[in-house]
Image (cartoon, rainbow, N blue to C red; front, top):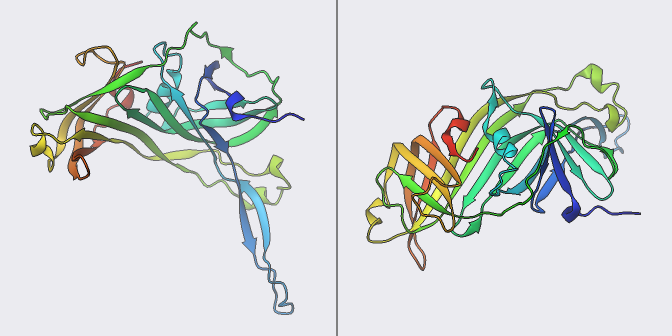
Length: 304
């Protein structure tokens, strides 16, 4: 009898006929649940049946999350493409995701990445936390299962990247930064897929009804900038704007702040509100959202 250990798990993405090995932290999670409907069995003639009956005919969407360290070699760049780009401005790019353990290979079909979260902390490893959904989770084989697709070449090395944030927000003083965050979110709504005819033929998980299509309700690009309050920026603590130019850069430690950066996103226009945070040291934060409806991939001006 063999067990499956998270630290031994390998994650693969198959997109466009190509297979990508994605190196993650141990923060991998995936699951799918079935929806249960209950109904009363108590009748007028038999009041003793207090416990309700249940039917299970359909599955909820599969959910997954994983964290990817971004490296100098950029072998993991496919995940940012899947996060940022849309197909015909209507659908996220879908892919199949495989997780291979020491005893099993699991597959999530027609997966989409619905959220990516970046954290820009001084002298911290640069990572992206990804969350998404898919149609169906299944066990497709054991640890010897052959992942489909043309395996893409990998660099001989994988070099973790230590970065620090460089922020430009109009003409404001954005020095003395504690850090910044950036979140790219796509809100999707799965189309109703349950029918009476199909539900009558469901006997187990192999022929249950699974979601198949979705629509995009909205997309948001938002985040927070945090800095120490000083004499140079104290007049900014109660500021706001609905038409600002925001540039966020992740610059490799050891390089000058004037460098183009390893990663850069330009949000123009951006809306923000500033707020004061009291504590042992006074801070001020800027909560921002993008109001720019141009293609998100074109706003990431440095990385791809």
